[in-house]
Length: 204
Ligand code: PCA
Image 1 (cartoon, rainbow, N blue to C red):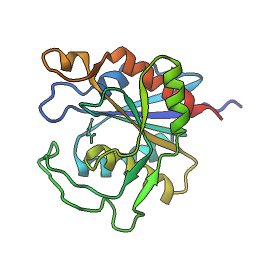
Image 2: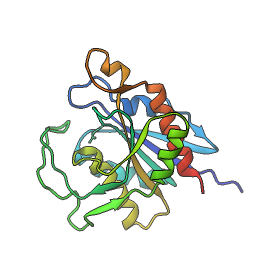
Image 3: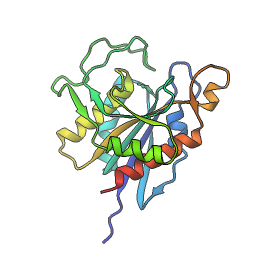
């Protein structure tokens, strides 16, 4: 019997006054199947409470072997593969439901940090060999993206699941940068970067 692998890929809704979020614009364009794996795409809310509630449910329902979370890192010029998620929520800007935590742990009884379990360096190398500018990032920040990454890794750890998970930050899209002096990347390239990240994470 051939068992099909399943990959859960998420992007975020827009936030911070943007009309789109390039992470979701790219994720929604992904095929439903890649290298023989089923691709399940979900959009996440930009709320601390939302991602903490939703991600454990999605991981339980979808039962993926690989979880790739993606989000916008406006101002970064390249694709950044996050190495680590930390157990803190600290924000100067409100999330999409007006919540603005300061120095709060995401989960009280959790470690200070989790490392990504997707092959971070291998993904960066694969992206570069496809001609896509990419780097390892050592901080996913302390806003909703870090909370999403931490929640996924914590859920997988406490349930002892055989699941690899990680987070890819993407630059603004061309569309968002039309009238501003900010680094940007076409959605097509961001989509290809997510595909390369999925493929590389599926390798044994
Ligand atoms: N980027 C934000 C949250 C949602 C998103 O796309 C972040 O980097 O935390």
